[in-house]
Structures are given as C-alpha cells and as structure tokens.
Image (cartoon, rainbow, N blue to C red; front, side, top):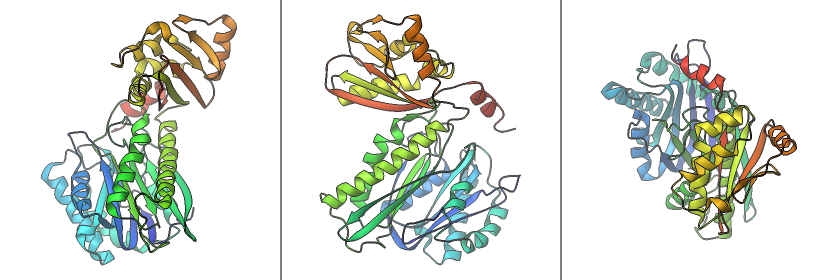
Length: 396
C-alpha cells in the first residue's frame, strides 16, 4: 500500500508494548511543517496524548505524529504526561524538528504506564523505517482489537494539479459519537490555511465519525488529525473557492469511508446498518432520532439476531426527545415495509423477507416519522456474544 500523498512519510515498528512482537509504534512525518488541525474527545477523562496534542496544534502546524497501540496512556497521572513529553521530545531530536511540532496519540488499555524505556530505544528504528510507501506498516502499528487496517483515499484537482488525501484509522470498540470516537489521520498534499482546514475537519467529522456507533462508549483517547503538506499545489486554497469545495468533499468522502469501516469492524460485529430517518421537522431532529436508534442496545441485539423487531426501533425513536406523531411512523428494512403509518404490516412472508435482508453484511433501515423535510442518518452495527467475549477478556 503506497502512501501516495506528497510530502509525507510513514513508519511502523515494534516498540515493546505488545507482548507478541507485533507492530505497536507508528510515525507520520512531514518533510516540512504541515498545516494541521485536530478534533479531540469530549470525554472529561482525557488521555495524556490528547491533552498534549490539543495544546500543540493550537499553532496550526505539525511535522510529526507519534502513535502507539496497546497502551492508552490514560489515567496515568503525572508519570503518563511526562512519558508523552519524553517520547515526543525523543522523536523530535531524532527527526531534527522542534518538539512543539510533534504531536502524539495512543490507544489501548487504560490505566497502565507506558513501557517508556523500550519505546524510547525503538524511536531511532522508527525514524529509519520512514518511507513514502510506509502507510501499510503505520496502519498495522496503530491497531488494537481491529480485525485489520482501515485505509481510504480520494483525489481532486486544483487547477492543473492533482491533489490527494490518504486516510488511516483504527477503531472497533468504545465507539460512540462525541467527537470522533477513534483515532483517525487524514493527510493531503493540497495547500490550505489552518483556519480553513480546521473548519473543514470539524464539519466532516460531525457528518462522519460523529454519526457512527458501535457500543455507546466514548473513549478517553479519541482524536482525528488532518495534515496538509502543500507539496502538490503551492498556492493555498481559498476558503470559498471551487477547489475548497472539492477538498471538503474529498475529506468527507475519506472520513465517511473510514467511519463505515470502523463500524463494520465493531468488536464481533457481523452487520453494518445505516439508519436513515426521514420526515422530521429538521435535519437535527432526524439525526437525533437516528442516533438514538443506532445506539439502542436492544435494537443492536435484534440486528445480531436478524430479528425485524419494529417495536424496539419505535421505542428507541420515542425516547429520542424529538416530537412526532406515532400514528405517522413507517419503518422499512431494506425495501420491505414492516410498519406503516402507526400499525405493523408484517405477514409471515414479509417477516421472512425482512429477516433475510438482515442477514446481509450491509443494509439500511428507513424510519419515516412524518412529512417534514428533515433527513438524517447514522451508521451502526449489531452487538452479540463476541463483543462480550472480547471486552471481558481485554486486559487478561
């Protein structure tokens, strides 16, 4: 897997965190200071790298991102904060860049101190491993309970120049909207002002990662970063230009693809389901109803059992806090109506068709709550026995 984005190199090595010798330290390095933006978890319990990186990105520039998996460096107190500082300082020294331009991210077990010494010793090898074609190693180095790497790409033209975006993410558990609910990295070789990049990232995150739910838990370590090297187009993209609209669309496309991959990889998940709500008074109301349905544990277990249980869907919609008339509600699973204008319409035949649809790897549930113009969607997955097994055994 080639990096494919000018101005960036990637690396992944074993740094002594994972006992099986798997890759557990990753690095993204820009050839020059890149324009940077980030969005971070809204959980009040925040990991040391989140606090450090949010502060360092205030300046709008970043030249390196040091990432580790297997250890969240969260709830680790002063020692954890010092470890994050020490590791970024060491990376900066080997790279020959200012420490203030090195951000960090961690994912893994909460409440365990980082094995700082072997990680520090691995940094020279990590820097040596940097390559324009190293994205595959980086993508593997940031995984925890994921079944595999999550990568997405898009490209667009700015004048005569072709610009690219490469997105890499990890996430399978502790996924629920309250910023981004995962670790995500989007690199582009376009040139853009930091304020414009941040606005684009916030908007795209809200419409993608913040519309994804696996289990209702918002992590202590959530962070999504966007870096722009400017290596493919020297002139910065103007905020309200056609090029800006192309970049914004490409960024949203990449993050949407990554968010779907995160939900599809929900721990033990077998089904990726798009909940679409129509007919609400506003888009915000529609999104709120979709969010509540997508996050319902009873709905998610019904998805796992391929059970077209419209009652659970309606009950979740009814507690969303959004006003609607239950007599106006209709529900479809795929193309199969199961509830129409306030009454169930399932026969043995339609229930069989709906259940068959729910056996697919990916499908859609449509809920109409009225005749308003509001439309919203959410991505969710089923919740089953494997999720419990993975998380019951996570630390042991």
